[in-house]
Length: 535
Ligand SMILES: Cc1cc2nc3c(=O)[nH]c(=O)nc-3n(C[C@H](O)[C@H](O)[C@H](O)COP(=O)(O)OP(=O)(O)OC[C@H]3O[C@@H](n4cnc5c(N)ncnc54)[C@H](O)[C@@H]3O)c2cc1C
Image (cartoon, rainbow, N blue to C red; front, top):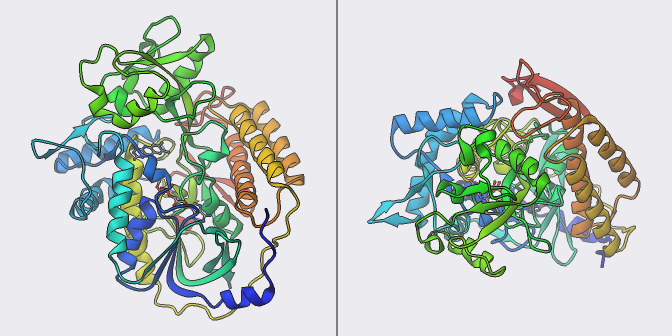
């Protein structure tokens, strides 16, 4: 059922809610920020589902961090730049690799139990990393361990209120400054929360595609909210498709971590042949976009498989979560070929932000997958995103604290969002599925002008029947449409192939790498040296 429209009186009461800091999202970026914000003021953290539900909680492979001193840090920087295919913001990459070890030490202090052997932290390797530098936990449940330990830590802090099942609707603006957000709670009640500083740590948007490794919460809400508030979003055409999601009719697109290839898995085609030698000298550990396109091409002749039958290790012990999942399908890593194909996985683009989380709108900060600092350029290096959330979440908190000397607004000029629904729940679901399957078909891994223009027409048609109202799904439908529209416009305008963005009709690189920036309906391309201050 759609929620009823709240009375203006109820809204006015709720509008009195005030905090120092509002954080939308309780994944690694949000919680990393909260750990600092709580020392300096009251913090409200909202999350759409249970606290445990986020992309962070699903991260398997691990967190990349250079714990081996200066040389290791320098190599991590080089690998990050190389994976990003000319578009990485060097400042952001520096900050990531240099501050990463300190933030990970902090995680260890807070009790995060990374896997160890004889007391030493175990390190594995993933695609496009020049050395083993990935910490993991419980074999293949790294994100869950980090999320649990961060939450445990945050719960010990004063000043923090955690609200589950509460969805951010829109940002509150006053004289061009973000002063909080409207929210809808699990019972359909509308809240207006005023804050000195608001952080969007709302994660990615994998749900914009029908095939994705992302959980249901990843609908790009924060990006759409920021965009509607006039913030610039950048590089939205760069969606990383993970090469190896489980591929069986009726089964979820469960991620089969890159760490499997790090531990020696081969990719074989329907004829049982390894094929990566035809695509890249790094073979199975080539950058993700190369592997994903290779699998798509080989997949035209039949299924593609991960093959670990030659790996002489106890794979059940190393990958317990993946092994448990595969057992549901009577498959075993040591014994069987495992069918795989790509799925949408990680958004490199997002709300344009500097390394301190500042966006182009005062009062609004962004960190983690929702943000685009340029740290991943056109393609993310495997396992750099947990580190991104940890490092840039903390830096955004520091900026929010130092910028927030201004008193929170006392003006109560809120336009209540319309709660009137125009569709049934079933129709809203069908509308969303239509958008997602068409995005996969026309704006997925291999793109061209014809497909992208077709998608634009479909988005125009979908706009005419856009779900209204304040049910969570209606809110998500509108956000998915906004995010899809920016992805498609940016992908159409980028007439080159770079990183994760591949155009069949423009397979070459442009000479100059440029960032796409979309703001208030206008798309521009900006030089590689783009910063928030330029927009
Ligand atoms: C299957 C899988 C495996 C992965 N493996 C790895 C890996 O091994 N290593 C690695 O580095 N990265 C990995 N990633 C990527 C990584 O997990 C994410 O990029 C990272 O966790 C994002 O963190 P975040 O804090 O920015 O967002 P998230 O962890 O996604 O958190 C977003 C939060 O925002 C909330 N939210 C969203 N919209 C709203 C709204 N409107 N109102 C209120 N709350 C909202 C959500 O409920 C959630 O709490 C993986 C991702 C997936 C899906």
